[in-house]
Image 1 (cartoon, rainbow, N blue to C red):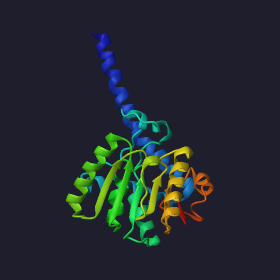
Image 2: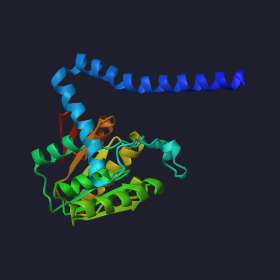
Image 3: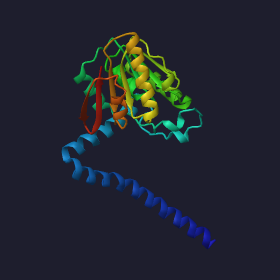
Image 4: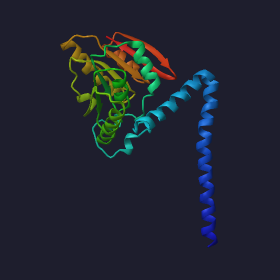
Length: 245
């Protein structure tokens, strides 16, 4: 009896400690970020986080929570070459789309589209056709539910589709000019995707753009020699590289 009571007390104390840890974690981030970035940029990043949660609350979607690929039960040849799913922040993305003034009549392709956040944002930004490329059946299912809820809430009628396939096997067609990645793969897969884009451009010459958030494989993109120019852009703490042919 005493042992059970002691266990219950310990459990209660551990629960309180966990809640305290969850409270202190963002406070530590706030202090560290303010020292590194300054108050204004830290406030902008914090506002971005809040807006992302509000995005899901407003539309009834599930996009904010990250997902480790190892936690998903599907099997695929390139699963070990993929990164954790994380949602693109809405404010930096939409701001960037306004700045770039890309042709809205061209097809927007998101490689590693996950739960579909960028597909909804690209549709919101005015692109008439949007394609998400995702090889996880579980994430595709979540994304399709999210899209249904988003379109029902917003009345957005633009054509948005999700193709469940490996990014290296995705067929790139002449109508596709704008490509997006949020650090979804390692260098091996990024290199193959860039090569596929290059072959498509060689068959059907056209201007193309690549928008790469957290560009860890920047050198791989540059070495692919498909995109001739690139520009770094940081918006509300989101680091982008913009590539053009």
